Amino acid sequence: MTWARKRCHDSIVGRIYLVILMLTHPVVLSYHLVDRRFDFGITWVTPRQFERQVAWLAEDGYRTLSLSACLQSEFQLPPKAVVLTFDDGFRALMKHVLPVLERYGFVATVFPVAGYVGEQNRWDYNLFWRRMWHLDWNELRELLAAGWEVGSHSMRHAYLPSLSRAELLHDLRQSKERLEQNLQIPIHHLSLPFGRGNLRVLECALDAGYASVATLGQEFDLADSSLSGISADRRLRLFSRRGIYLHDTLRSFRRRVQAPMNSQSERLRQQAISVFSYGTVLLKALRQSQHCEKSLEI
Ligand SMILES: [Zn+2]
Image (cartoon, rainbow, N blue to C red; front, side, top):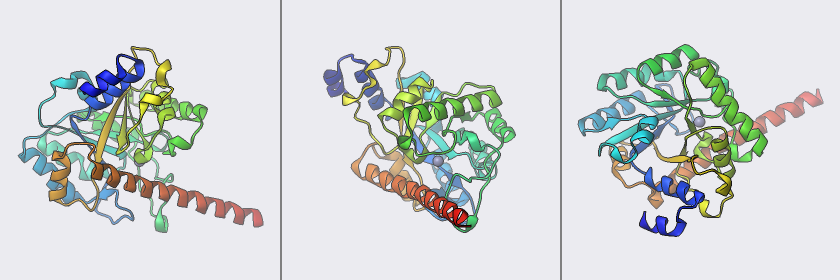
């Protein structure tokens, strides 16, 4: 922290850089799907795995917080504070996650794909055409009533670094507005699809009015960025999350929660999983292009 303060002084870029360092506490965990049905890939956990993990958190004295509570309290957080986040907003949350968290008095943050609320996950690559339902508006309201927080996971789950600035701004603003209008709450937090972004994505997140961005194992070198045009009263907080996946045993889960953030092995693990996840989108694009070619031939 001292080093960063010296290096960055009080430039705008420096302030953002400092904020990134500050928010390595609390522990922010990232889940995707919690379901009994087998799914290809590793970005899911079984209900039994999830229950055991939550039970251990409770037994070990952890308390859950929302991302907004973290931003408001910053350094005043309890020592064992954990934020549970769920990307994509699958309907299975209602059955396998909400009842478990309620049993322990825990809350979480869900990041639905705003353009697919109440619809199937057509944005994802699905082997054997297996589809899953996303939460609908009533279910999202039910989660809010249970003390959960809702953030945006973009409009269509696109790989954001591949979008132009105009496309990015449109997507991030549209997803925020759609969630705000339907849920009648302000949306402050953005979770990056595939956990990946770049400096342009961060700039657009700020311009679209987000207060924080949740990443997965990615660091940003803001020192050489073009973020210098950002006014002093607008700060973007980055939450660096720890992904929990199918291969996590209770032992590795405990290690992940207790380990200092930003270890080299954790970053490499997370990057490998993100690349794998993005690979599924490339497969989908390939399949769609083949489908188009066939249609043209006909
Ligand atoms: Zn996602």
